[in-house]
Image (cartoon, rainbow, N blue to C red; front, side, top):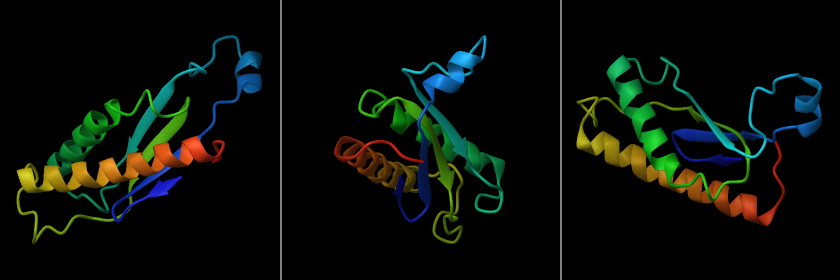
Amino acid sequence: MARTVHFVLHQVALDAAACQSSPMPLFGLHDVWLGVILPKRWAKRAVTRNTIRRQIYSVSAGFHSSLPPAAYAVRLCAGFDRQHFVSATSEALKAAVRSELLQLLVRAVSRSTTKPATT
């Protein structure tokens, strides 16, 4: 759906027909669901993954009303240079992650308003 240097946003529309066949649907059909995928390949230290995860949930909270109801996954697809970001909880890393996530979600919102949701 949207991509930046380090992140990819995937979207899957929630299927009302599939959920009606189940006695208790897994997802609410009129909600925005967000998952985070942070492979150890790209963020080796747990403290780095937790810092990035917190930034993702914090930034995305402001976009829940703008995104169409669907299941979303934010995936880290490239590592942040440890030579440049020495500390896993540095303000520089948080700012870089936050700015890139803002770009990602703005692209996603603009795409969702111009065409229907796809996988």
